[in-house]
Image (cartoon, rainbow, N blue to C red):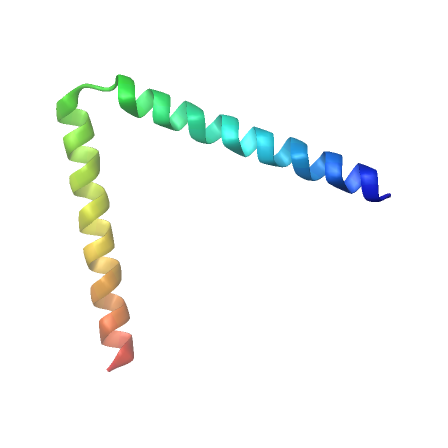
Length: 58
């Protein structure tokens, strides 16, 4: 049982690592303009998230 749980965990970790590697590879092969737009979108999302947390804290 223990060994099978470890192998399931390892295969899940490997598949998630491969998925993340694919995302990074796709992003790094993208044009600089697309990378810039994605970064702006991410920063906008984080700003909205921070504002909502601040409002909930009040």
